[in-house]
Each structure stands twice: as structure tokens, then as C-alpha cells.
Image 1 (cartoon, helix red, strand yellow):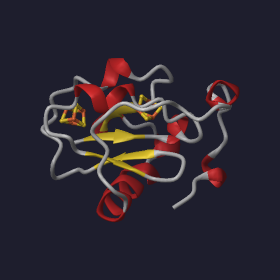
Image 2: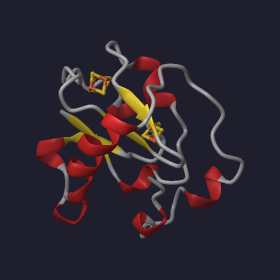
Image 3: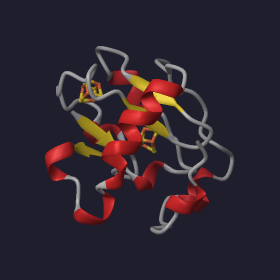
Image 4: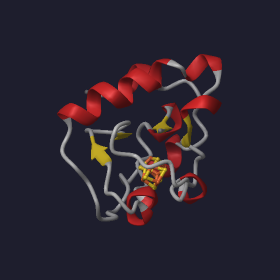
Length: 106
Ligand code: SF4
Ligand code: F3S
């Protein structure tokens, strides 16, 4: 399955949900998650994210591995999102910030 990693936090541009053929994105307060059992590995969402926050689980770097579990757990709890929506007003201020996982709201 594909995985949403740290860069999504507080950016949440949602371009990704627009292309997903199986609508397997779930929306948290400041990040999205992909449901690992619903994702069909089509790869369409990966190039859509302006902050490169999506990748295949086999390509997740060592320091982002915890996000595999975060996607699995949160996609069970958060509501489905299948339509693109406006990003947070301050999204662009967060797009180059690397260390922001402590800001993840569940
Ligand atoms: Fe959806 Fe395809 Fe992305 Fe999986 S890889 S989340 S099925 S667009
Ligand atoms: Fe997040 Fe990128 Fe989608 S910022 S909401 S993974 S387009």
C-alpha cells in the first residue's frame, strides 16, 4: 500500500484524494491517511502531492517508518475524504518544515 508521511502534516493540500480510484483516503485534523487494505497500489496519488508526502510502503525512509502504522491506525478512525478541499490558510508556511510529527493531531 501507499503511505502518507510527515510532510503532509499541516499542509493537507488534498490533491491526492482527487485521483484515488478507490477513495481510500481518510482525513484527520491536520493530515490524511491511506487505508492500507483499501489502497490498490495504483500509484496515481504519489505525483499529485506538492510536498511529496506519499510513497509506497517499501520506499518509506527509515525515519518515517512509524507512519506506516499511523496510516493503518488512523484510517480506521478518521472519516473518509474523496473530494479536494481548500488547504489550511497557513499550509504554505509548513511545506518546507521537516520536523513536524510532534504536531500531528489524532
Ligand atoms: Fe488511492 Fe492509488 Fe494512491 Fe492507493 S496508490 S491511495 S489506490 S490513488
Ligand atoms: Fe497531504 Fe499531499 Fe495529500 S499534503 S493531503 S498527501 S496532496
